[in-house]
Length: 134
Image (cartoon, rainbow, N blue to C red; front, top):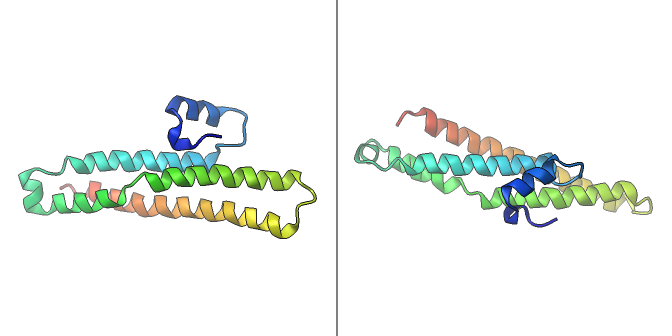
């Protein structure tokens, strides 16, 4: 499969909705988090008025924007797609050693944990910024 970041959104959604194993839920979560980061970054970009600078809101917005990248999340979406495809292969290849199968399983779990933790951290920071009322 092509890199998720290079896919047009309609193609990504059609592939996600199809009866194919990848992309799956992990990739969808990472893409959704990237979209959330982009939207929050847009909101923070509007916090540049004089009153925002005077109140410190502009500084908070700039700090938030520095955390809201999408590249890491889109890479995680690709990593999830690759990891799940490898994991699925372990179910089909009966001759694969258990240690190798375990490595693929761990890789899939680590990617899931990365996306979950990244999403939780950024969601908290976005919420704090947006609910501050500045």
